[in-house]
Image (cartoon, rainbow, N blue to C red; front, side, top):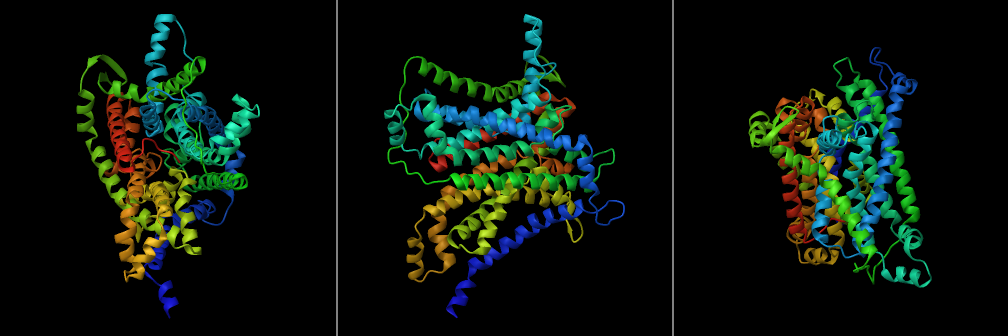
Length: 551
């Protein structure tokens, strides 16, 4: 009898409720998407016509190859740029290190398409640098549009993710291993490839996977700067919301192909990581040392050059927001006209962003706290499955999740399309993993004996959680919630599918203003987003007691 009560406690009920919620808002929409891809739009019968159509024409399957080319190149470049950066920061005393770490994070926390817009302002056909070099030195700048532009924007945007992962891994490397290697004549580049890379390889693979998925899913960058270089997210968007007679069944089929492809990459990464994984305990952790001569100059030069180029787009956007503008043309002088125009024309989008993000983050905090607790403390087949479901949005691109939700909730009794509710669901499902991850890490650190002591004194499971465990979890929950908040306010790929005039957010407003040529208004809104991001990061550092973010 006692065993039955134990199984049917409040945590079992909470687990079942959250699991059913995920079935409704994630599994069911993805299943609907799968079914839609096999239903012929004319006969309404089972058919493989959509899949055949995709692989018959190079216009369609070429987009997949384009996406693959972009993601592989971006991932490799991010690894090649960020790994030495993290190693230099970990082993060499760099002047202004704390500020540089914050600036690296700031450079990564903005929506990628804003970076694309900034580089168009700099190196576009009518860009500042383009015009200056042509008029002054008669130098023609290479085209920023197409594959090279996408590569530049995403590499600068996503390199900090690898930096954060590698920085975290380097903290676990025991310096005695490196000293032993040096004593045996293994130094310099040889030490890096023979000792350091193998030690951090599992973490490097995890970071590379995240970069790969982000690059694969990005919609705004190729849409703005890609021009004729079409990637899969752009193809899916055009097929789903085309004024020339798009086909949502075909969009669903392409989405299924992308999900299968992304899942295979995810499982492959997991397999390799598990094969190469091991536990490290840094009894003698690496310390940053002061170096002299050419090594010191090269180390500082590499770090400062990266941060200068990475931050350049945001500096340009902030500067542009204070210029007098007339559409795409910047006239002489400075003013606040762009800000006045932004608040008068698209003020609703600013209010919507805050309203939707606040509601979403409250739900994220509640769900993440409960999910983190049950998946760590109440291990069983159901919580293990729930753990997998919560991380699945990492694999599914935002535009595909948006289409799945729209196809599922567009008729009664679950008519949510065009409402605030469907936007909030998308934000919560997409950004919940960040808070779950940091919350679960805290739960792992809390000794279970504390809870057992409270229960032995007569406290219920729920009271023990609320009075003992929750207060100890709060720093991790809040830290994760701030990261979720930053990604929610910069969300575009899902929002662009689900929004209406009443639920338009700042990122959508920026995107549409850029397309319309209202560069001043777009720059103003992007600047506001940057300021919110910086403030959020400063709060994160204050709450977490850290001076950096590592993964």
